Length: 217
Image (cartoon, rainbow, N blue to C red):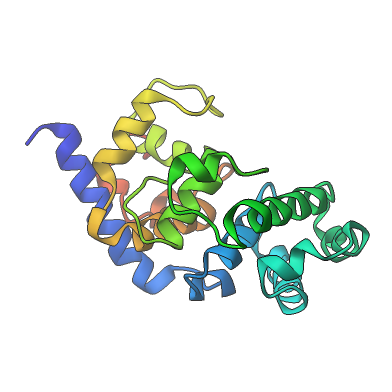
């Protein structure tokens, strides 16, 4: 086993164990409904998760299905998500719902190619839906996850890096807990938020510091 494989196995096992005690709880993590997970992922873009919780809850309460959302006035959706900022997302949600009703009978597709053809759905949201809703073993990569891998493996990549990155993708694929992809990807997101943060990372309480290239000695 080479060094990369050894380090991949270590971070995988340690973060899965860490997440049992420290993983965060959010309402969109308590469902495998593709619609609800898609809504959450769009609202979470450039927004702190804790701020999304009440807005997500109210939006799902008012529009529990794709068909319901497709009938909603954009102005009403804008008013709902106003506390989060980036209200252009109201238009994204409306157009996405209309597209799903027209082309997919109100259902989200479960293939990457079809998901990427949806309005407002990019690589990250597509991967999140495939993993969290359809339980597929796919990597979830955003700037926060890249930060973890760059630090841990000592990669020569400037942060924030441009995505996607072939080197990062190879590392992410080698680390992914394929039989527990959903749990592991959530663990990565939680670890980036709670420990391996952009500013003032908590290196001295980090569960993977023993093998981390970034850890101060």
